Length: 271
Length: 257
Image 1 (tube, rainbow over the protein chains, first blue to last red):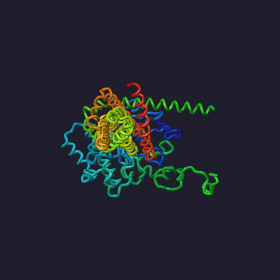
Image 2 (spheres, rainbow over the protein chains, first blue to last red; image 1 turned 90 degrees about the horizontal axis):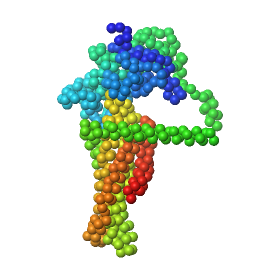
Image 3 (cartoon, rainbow over the protein chains, first blue to last red; image 1 turned 180 degrees about the horizontal axis):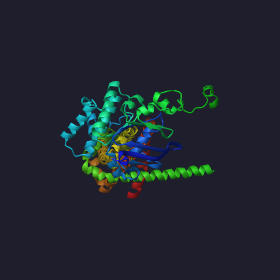
Image 4 (spheres, helix red, strand yellow; image 1 turned 135 degrees about the vertical axis):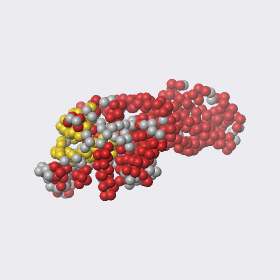
């Protein structure tokens, strides 16, 4: 296999802005087939936006994104949907359909895209729910689930079509330590056993370090650093060290731009 | 002064752009409708239940009292000219041609329209529509079209039920309570109401059904995905539907007279 076919997703010179705010400028990034790639960065750097650009929920102002060698900006809706069938996406809040129960949520893609018998759909759905430990919650409605449970159901739904690429947007938020450990192992196992390519957006440096093959640290609209978790942990760059070790002081300011604190407290700027 | 012209230009541009999007949105709904009816009738029937059957109580209660008050007012005024036997005619024409379709559409906007727009708006705010997009399922086809069709199909039936309960209410008030002759009540009505009057009511109910359902799904789909945005979309649904229905009622009446 040559280098070109190793790259499942390639992003070239990506530029995206919202209003006057530039979110990405000349971003270049490659996601290798069969690997678990983590996209990390301080809050507000546009990691979720990047996922939406990769899946063409958003369209960049400049640059190109290739998935399996296809420029996704050039696709019509039908072709785009064909590409999206290769994706499974776990949304930050789960995004379960609230008017149907857990079982039907996981069965939803199967009912929409396949003509499988009810019996087979039942088998597949229960298998996926069992994998995330929620087979017993099949009859519950999404409103009855905790945040962590909802995300696990959403994970079962994301993998029910056996996608080629699984995208996780903050998969570890709200999970208890036991569930988190199970999910981390599940992500790794699925990736290795089924040959899936995984993309994880997360702040959780410790968990990501245990599961990711390669990490990209995004800051100021560009890739600030990339490499294996060990390489990033050992990096000399101040920004990388600040982020990887959770330090308060460093190039990334904790405080959002604001007027002088004392003057604002004394109310001078409002008068 | 230049600022004023720029504001007018920007607003006019935005209005034309929104109106164009609205028309394209309507065409998309129409384009997907036949396939949805033929291949997924269950989804449409569920929405007929949600928008139609669940609106029955409010429609019937309001219909009864609107008919009752028409019977009361009609009797009181017609009795001055010894024409109280014509109360059935007055009530029937008012309900079939005007009040039935208009009040049903306004009630529909308040009950089903708000439910539709807030449901769709919340689905958008909680990423459910984005999740469908990511599952390669078109949310316009899967979510909006069944709801639009549910409203369109329900409205003529709701208007018919409103009109019938209105006539029943008028009958109770004028015949049972005010002693108008029952034979005169129905006979006068039969002599005065012809098929053209019913056709006008049916046409209005179909047009209002399309407009009220279309505006509800449009507002929900274009809601700003926040709690405040969904609330505003819901309010706008009622306001814009009410204005549109009353303007269209005038236009259809003017054309059909």
